[in-house]
Image 1 (cartoon, rainbow, N blue to C red):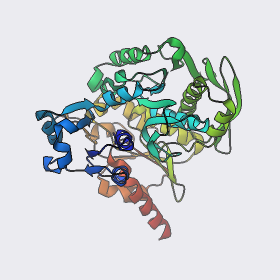
Image 2: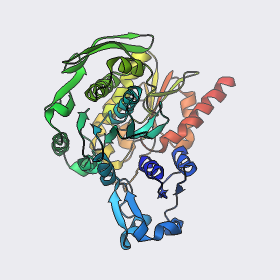
Image 3: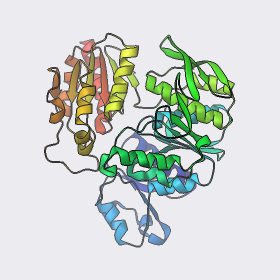
Image 4: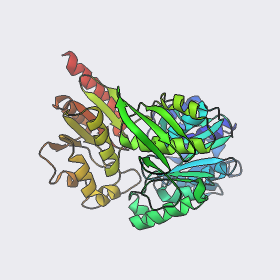
Length: 430
């Protein structure tokens, strides 16, 4: 949503909006000229935006269905459109590279944006996180090509008009929307069918036709992989070319898969292989995607992981880059329905940590579900597990014997990281 706000500000429109929590990102929007409130009271709507004839109302399905602000606009003569519809309209105005998948979208689109820019392309990009190389989740430098994170939630990506597609994964998620993993897979297939098979780049092993990417497999593949000074070094083979001695300074085999997808799309967009080599080596990652916030007295990693597959990816990366270290996982579950649907998967993933700290479920748009709390993830886990309040969190992490701490979740746990860091620093100086 903040990317769209920036887009319309860049077009010269007056922009106002609501967010549940004011953050550095909403502060940035204010500095750019937007009016932002965290109040759901309709009196917070500025007078300028009460004129239905002059106002376009854009909303995200992530907002509660009966938000007082949304209800106000619905009862008037305002035109309301979902975020996905607007992104879809913009995608029809220029060549569009769309990255879909239950995991990997944000890193892949951020890396793709970086690769295209380094190759001289003038881009419009809508990303799902803050790409460190541009310090934003939005870029508007031209219309050579659009890069967009194709969101499967609420079938949003079906509004897009892509010219090329990458599909990174089809793990079950959002079952509150789809009902079953089969229905989710069918929808991904329908999205992929928006382009011809030659314009699809599919992770090897997924049941969708097209070019494939992977590690040592696929039409577009990572080969000759090795690690050197904390980085991956590899070659990238396609049916037409091989780019040698690529360097990815970003941990985790899942990020090699993301790099494969981004490189495949960049080559499809006619980027120069030499520029891709230089750009990949300078990729700085995405905020809250295995972001190492500190390395002493403990390694502190901040990650958006909110699905068992993503937690497993965090553990894999820790075990690769911090082998044989005692590791603590701090997790705030996101959504009651996701906690219920993937209880076993969460337990199995969290059990890979030596110690586990859980916070209460972050509800986001949902109302509570009877019997579904964070406590169900503790049952039959190992003894070094605790369910605590945020107030207890800082000292609990500081007192842990763990050498590596991963803070994980898609809710407001991100706002606790600074306080955890400060507690660790204070303790180290005592």
